[in-house]
Amino acid sequence: MASVYEEKRISKAIMRVGLPAMLGQLTTLIYNIADTFFVSLTKEPATIAAVTLCAPILLIIMSIACIFGMGGSSVIARLLGEEKKKKAGNTMNFCVYAMALSGAVTLVLGLIFLQPLAKLSGADADNMTYTCDYLKWIFAGAPFIMLSNGFVHLFRSAGLIREGTIGLILGNVINMALDYIFIAVFKWGTAGAALATSLGFVCATVYYLACMIREERRGNQLVPLNPKRFSPNAPMVRSVVSIGIPGALITVLMSVSNIVLNNYIGIYGSDAVASYGIAYKLDMIPILLSVGLAQGVAPLVGYCYGRNEKKRMADIVKYTVFYGVAMGAVFTAAFVLSGKLLAGIFLQDAALIDQTGYFLKILGLSAPMLGVINMTTSYFQALGKAVKSLTITVLRNAALFIPGVILLNHFWKLNGVIAAQPAVEAVLTVVCIVMYVRDK
Image (tube, rainbow, N blue to C red; front, top):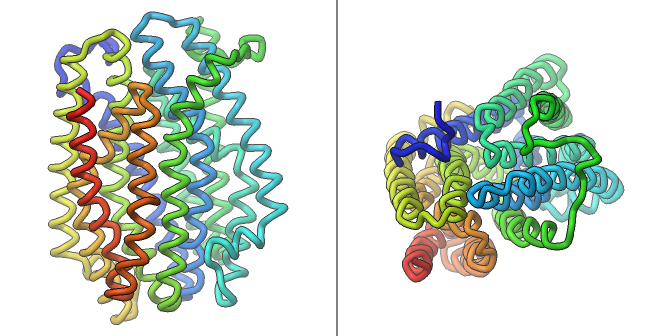
């Protein structure tokens, strides 16, 4: 089979890179939902709230990996388009060691500042113990969380799409199996959920490292693991970080916006936080699938840019946006029609089911818009246009979202807080279309 970069049919090329990435994101989603399901078996809203409150911290840890994973992926794809394989391999090597070092630093700092971080995330007297139990094990696994998440992006850019997807699925399947053992059998609650998460990432990292060793022995110049190949220079570091930081800020600012959102929802009690937490987990289905599609296609866009194939690149973006919008519309319809039914899978209390179903209907309104927003963001990242990518990120998660939450809370209380996401993304969709058209 020809390399995905050489695939002539655009729709087939998109499916070859997009479907594995979406499958990987889907298993991540299933793990997240399973995690919430097993924690919900405790029938304690405070434990569900604790897992919800810790989610932004976990996202921040993953975002550090994005500096080198997404940044490196963008640089590597463009270098391959320019037929500079050795430089691409050296970039891969630098990114791997940079992620490992960053993970070790995060582990130490996270355990030192555990309680202040729990308070910052919105924990109160009801759920502080559960929150700290969760964060402790997440920070313990930080190096593996970073390596595993970074490898996914790096492998895709190197054409190891199947291996990247297998590692992601492997980690999430192990995660779910351990969730059952640690939570349902051993009754370890939030600590068990976090330990299962970290161990899943450990297994995925071991798999990725084994793949790199195998590829290096086969003479693949793109995946050198040997420390002797560690030869970063200022232009390399600058090119990776300049793209990686905006990519990482997508997750960091998402986490910051979620912390702000959690604090505002927390005003209305643990039941409101628990309802939102479950609705948000379900809403992650279209979010992660859209992200997977856009991120999977990004190396293909970068490769075309490196080869100056602008017509093919524009067609790839157009097709991907169409697929993303259509997929989002299906999920909007499903959430509007079956919100309460889906909420009932995780909850027993009738009032909480009603509230969660209502929240899900509101959140689901933004699903079609994700196809435009995520693809536009990935497009600018793939081309190395860091400022434009960063502009979308800042607008989405800070400049528009945080004032939106504050304003809508003032006028419509809890309903307004929940409605902030679709309201902001409707505005941002228009902004993204204008930015893309002007860039062509």
